[in-house]
Image (spheres, rainbow over the protein chains, first blue to last red):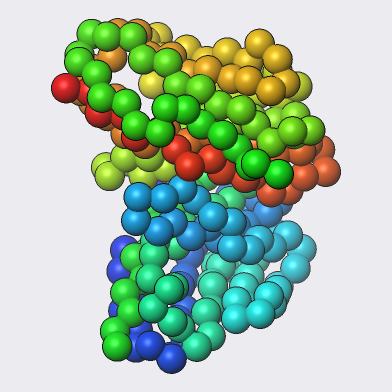
Length: 112
Length: 114
């Protein structure tokens, strides 16, 4: 299977919470990241979490990490139309390297 | 801070031509990364440099691809000769090592090889 896996699509209603899930395989990963990509644009870092943490909150964003299950999630509270984008999960530290390994991305679709 | 700067933003070329992509990392950053994004394969790391030295080029697809970092403020990714399957968005990112846990991405170069 893939090193970092994500669902391809998530559809939510405006104002609801969005939860985007990710699983990874490398237990040596040091940091885990969430990046956002809007159409035709580059990658914007949203947040990251160190592997010895289990939760991080930053305004509307909450990251949960279950290291035992190698499961990462991103919760976006009060989802707005501006949150419509592709969200990438990434891990750092695979094989001790500095490069990031990305998932294929989750398309977040906001319904009015 | 201007962020990571990439040029050109768009490039259209014909098969067999040489293509050179350029990147200026964030001032003070000492690690530089080249990634490629395609529909089929997603985002892949091609190569990265620490202190201008290539550390891992295992992601470079073929000998047609080469990357250099002659100084701390400039890097190039060259494809010679280019092929249609090289069409992709190429991203450059930089970070501060060893303390920097965050990679900052440039806007990307959209390459189309006809």
